[in-house]
Image 1 (cartoon, helix red, strand yellow):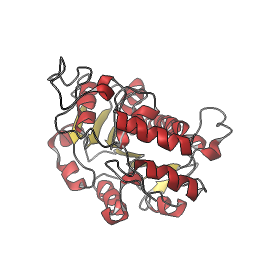
Image 2: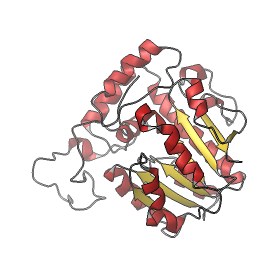
Image 3: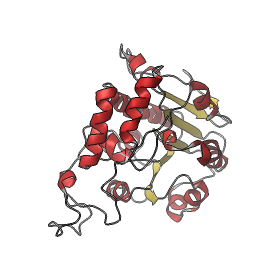
Length: 295
C-alpha cells in the first residue's frame, strides 16, 4: 500500500508565486512566504501535509489538497497525527526519566507545537538534540529552533536512507556523544521507506552506531484492519514526493529486532503510557508505536 506527502506548518507560503517577482523579504529564510529556491512546490510533501493536519502554518495548496482528499476517506486522519505527536512527547519524557538525554530525531519535520525539542528541554534544559531531515524548508525552521541553544542542538540536512552519511556529519558528531546512550527517533518516518530501500538495514546501521542503553522509538502506519479504505486514502498522495507503505503488525515488530521493547509493548499510539484514560475511539487511530532499548 502506498502514499506520499510531507509536513510543515501553514503560513502565507500557500499563496506564494514561485514564478513571479520575489516578495518582500524573499531573501530572508524566516520571512513570511519565503520558499527555498530548490524546493518543488508543485508536489505535496509528507512534512507539510503533517503540518497542515496539526493546524500549523507552513504548507502549500498542493499539501492542503492532498490532506483534505485523505480526510474525506479517513476522517480520523487529523486525530491520528495529533496522537502521533502526543505519543512522541510521552516517549521523550519516559526516556529522559530513564536517564537518556541525547536525541537523534530522524525525519524530524517542521518543529511546530509540541516538538521534541520543546518537550525535552522543558524537562532537561541541557539535553542534546540533532534534527535530521532532507527538506530544506524543514532545515531552515529547525535551525531557528537550534539557534536558541546552539551548543546542544544541531540540524543535519540529509536523507536518512543513507545512514552512514548522517552519522558522519560533523554537526551531529559535535552535539552527540555516540559513546553514551542516544534515543533514535523514527516517528511517522519508516512508512515512507520502500521495501527495496531496506528499512531494517537503515535501522540496524543507526543502532550499531550507539551503545547499550540507547533507545529506538518508532511509530508506523497500519491499515487499521480496513485495507480498502486505507488504500483509497493513500492514493490521495500518489503524486507527492514520497510513497507510503503500510505494514503489518509483525513487520513493524521486526523493526525492533536487536532491542527489548518496553511495556506496554508495540501498541496503538493512544494506549502507550497514556496520561489518564485513553480516548474511547483508540481503535480508529491506525498505526502502532513502541520504544525499544538496546541491551
